[in-house]
Amino acid sequence: MPYSNKIKHLKKLDENERKSLLEIWEKSVLATHHFLDEKNFNIIKDYLKNADLTELQFLFYYKNKKLVGFLGFHDDIIEMLFIDPQYFRQKCGEKLIKKALNDFNIQRVEVNKDNLNAIKFYKKMGFKGNKEYVDDFGYTLIKLELE
Image (cartoon, rainbow, N blue to C red; front, side, top):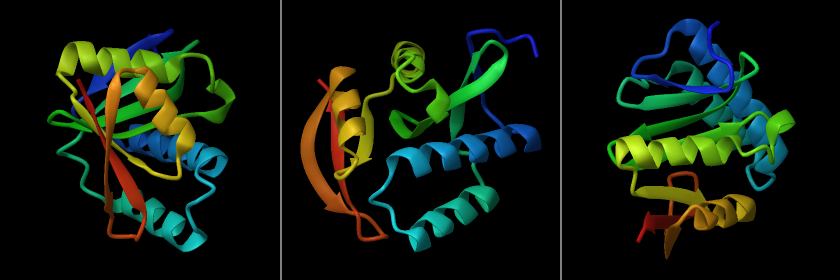
């Protein structure tokens, strides 16, 4: 693959890219989403395996030709951002966010209230807000927007 420390924009995922996305999602969630119960973890995992993700666009981040993280978005909202735990604290998420902000007019994100590290990260990246709502799984999410 010709990508070395680069971000690749994908409007459609092939089967290998989808498989890689799911692997990173699972590793990242297991490392960071301790508030997510096993039942909902499996429901979300099955959803991602089978969901029609054609409305989403993706930014895949490669480091030394290896996929290490991704950001999925739709319109002006970040739907998902996950990094392989081996690459935490190496600015992969920051690079993905900056690319999304600069090139795709991203304005919003929703974060689980119990995901304190993600809230802190998004606030560091310029997102603000504290409006809450409960999602379909019973988790409280916080809506954040750029000022």
